[in-house]
Image (cartoon, rainbow, N blue to C red):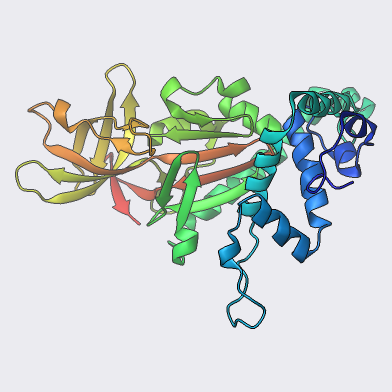
Length: 354
């Protein structure tokens, strides 16, 4: 019996044995639709190309007009993953409540399977070492993290082709432009140290998107990065060179309200009480600006609050790039950084654009 061609009965669903994929998976929060989808995709791949064509036409996923006769030089339309997903969703919606209950019951059975390949208790040898062993492990992981980030800060700006320049973090799609993008696996204990349990160390406005598998974080300022990522006086996002510090922060493009001249600045600090941020320009001038707000529009764009600008503010924000982190359930972290150099001169720090 094939789920695509014939509707499963409740008895048949409950008699299905867990697959190797079900056993090896660490997801024990499956829904009935998740299990149905897995079986559907397996059975779909067992069909021949001709059988798939018949199913897609009969369910109006494809139009019969898209298929020409055998003598035509025009090829048949491709069968895409989107077609497969649409058909799967359609079959699920057309299933009876009794059958959906059967898939939910099967999901409950799979969710009760033991999670193999994971630690259920601290190994005895680790427990004997206690905190010393844990601290050593975290120190080695943090050292690897520092070297990875420092390498990104020191490296010259990279050139990307257009497809690589576009990134999507949550609801926001953006072009990297002069930002640098990095991706790595982040040790879970380090993640807890940086962001806290359930991201408790973050301010409310710093978590901009969250699902069960992904969390997107925006950090505005250089000082906030130091606050979050400094361990025992070492910050991964600051590399001290011979003549300057390489670091990062939020980046803005400003336009003077009188002269219309544009300037580039970096966000050095922020005040959540006043909703203001301190921006330093390449000229050394420091200006105070209202923080942009994210997500006011459904398309995930930024609001710059031009209508609320005070008369004493000389600049309008035209563009803004925070430091972005995408934290994945798998343990991987994606990030985009706006790097710059800080050079100390006469007890003042001047920004050097990179």
